[in-house]
Length: 438
Image (cartoon, rainbow, N blue to C red; front, top):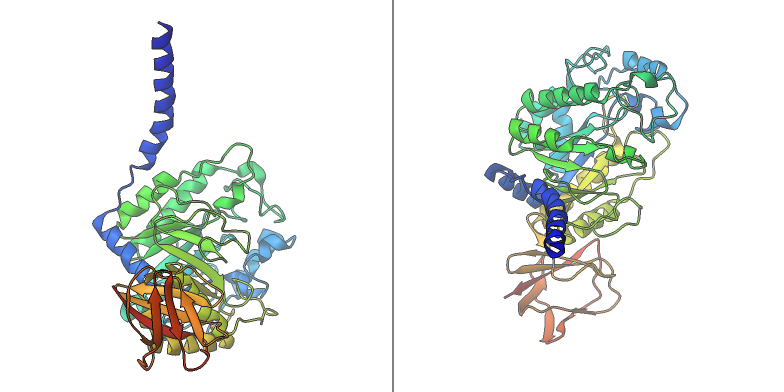
């Protein structure tokens, strides 16, 4: 009898362990979702746009949180928000010319202001500003015309809306009524807004969530009800991908994995220590220091640095989502446009070694990275001080030549790998060698 009881107890424990796994496995992506995942993985380069009334203050997108500001005083900025130089066609054209395949636009950031004509709140760019135009509508129409995918960033948290139960951020905001916290009401508000975004603006490539980390210090884990929200999104648009910048391994229902300010598998910025999944990967990075426009932040990374970061991201099998913060008048800063233009020129010449590639055979090295496309292995050399470069490869190399001018490169192969011998030390932003392998 004791043996039977022990068996039943073990069976019960086993069931408890198995049941959550079964629940997590219930999400089965549709064929159109799987196709969208592959298209996303092949695109390799997108532009992130952080733009809202916070640009008026020119202090970055966290201005409301970082200073003791009254939310009602902050909201008055909307009455002066008149981005008369906003031109959706110019934006999308510049982004397409940069070689980017998609745009991720901040539909609503943590400050609560919505950048479209939402019926869920008058605190939006149409109802609360003299500008009175639905920039998301204009952007969506232009993206569809020019063949650029449109993704929406959407904040799970809200520093100004009283219904959101305050987390570890937003506590500096003055004027909030903590007694009005009402998660069911806020959750309903979010889902109605998401329904608008996925119903009124055509095909949307992805919803990019942010903010779950706001409650990572709660003594009792907070239930964000992500599963139901994800299910709603996939029902509205089955091909729409879902990503969540929660700095954790992907949850059931998520279609891409996001890394913030770091390449997959790295954690230099302290935000991306999570394991790397088998989902399509994306790393988001700023072009200067901030996400939203900041007047004094003119410390833009060089075009060389940005190109190498893009190639290094591809070398990890991931996309680069590179951020720009438009000015309050609606223009993309000239420094950002200059770098985007130069990146586009480089990609027109070398994009084949980036787009639709997978992570290369050799992990990132001090000299550079590798990317692969079928039997073609691209060796991207950033830093090489010798006329020789050893590659620890298992595959058989049939040919070796420079990607640009197809000039043959001498090589020797043994069981340890391949030794490339150059006529002179490789130089330039990215000296690319193509290997034909089998």
